[in-house]
Image 1: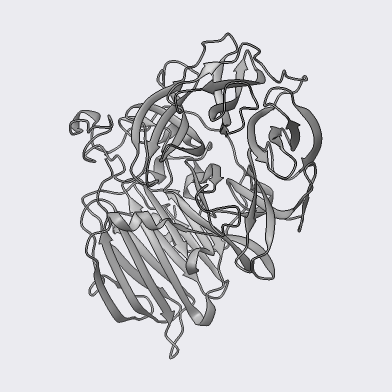
Image 2: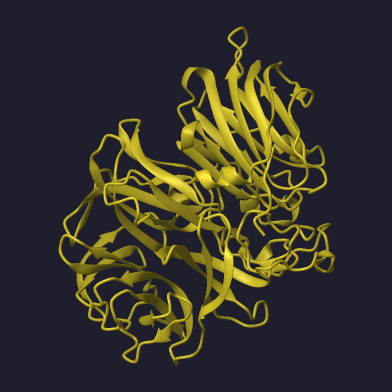
Length: 527
């Protein structure tokens, strides 16, 4: 049998078949639930003795999945995510509410939309909007949520409204506002205000199609067009927005959460740039781009800051850090469903003669950083795994920044940055010949007990100009989020390592590299 260490030596990434695997939580050498410290003010542990992330959002207990696009009300961001308080013995999700002023520190606000209360089932993914003009009849500034409810296998769209700033929502008496036309997959409404035409626009995931609908009042909806794909499985969580590129031009972006098997990927957030006339989206290219090349960035949402103005060149994003191939099998002690990613800042710019989104951690993450430990000018020869001279992290979350170049005297084919120790680690690296970065976790603590999809190496294209790669890596208790080349590539993955054995080592393959600069900074807990 090939050893875990050998399996991290990269070859061509094989195409994967994505399957749904739901099982009991794995049992392995992770701290017990009763080892947790006392809860903090938000109901989450004040420390991470149970392996809980320091800077990522998790429920205090039970199950979480899809985030819903945040809205900005009265100086705070309001985020909702799917939550099952009856996990693992009962089904159905509600909308759980958290709020923030900086998109880093989150305040627990409790359940905002209860499940199984109006006779139409539990509460699935949707979107909430601020009805500034009072078009729905609940008053100017009311928050209106359009959500999918599922009952006995039938998916319908319902309306809930809030007049207390999003703390609680009431079910509209006329629900469902959209009854199922007789199809299986009919869900995840994404609603935006079409300023140019003075009406609401909804995108609905309908199997292999995204349906476009319009409404004057958020209640009566008219079908306008469909965007169809036969290569991305069952589409989910659609997204549509207009954005200013770095050259000042304006473009529309359509995003979906999709199965990337046909494209040599796992599930993730696929997107296209293009044009939109109020009814029909026309992509610039047929093949999609992918916002993140890792295995665990799904059900992604994006949003703009209303204070930036319509011509803003930035947008925010976050996703569910999990994958349905193993979502029910994660070895977490106090909760299930993984976590939400850190918030990223998106920008739109030309890459390889095509407009694409870049993705980097938001600036506010920097406020969590302690004093960095830095080094520079470290030469690593072929076959060497260097630890000496590389700054090492303390226990807990940290941020690693590195610039690594091929040594011109004997240029390496590949460089690997190992996080962990020899017994369990994950690898972030760059393949200079292929122009790609990668994340491998087949040698972490969970890999041998997880489905094979977990151990697959994930890659993303990156230019690696002049034989050099720049990494910005955020490491937390159960995750690695790696950003390369100023956000041109990103890789997000759940990773399970020994929290007491955090170390950084660099290996050069097929030649030598020079670590031009490296810094490690601890990240203080947001709990």
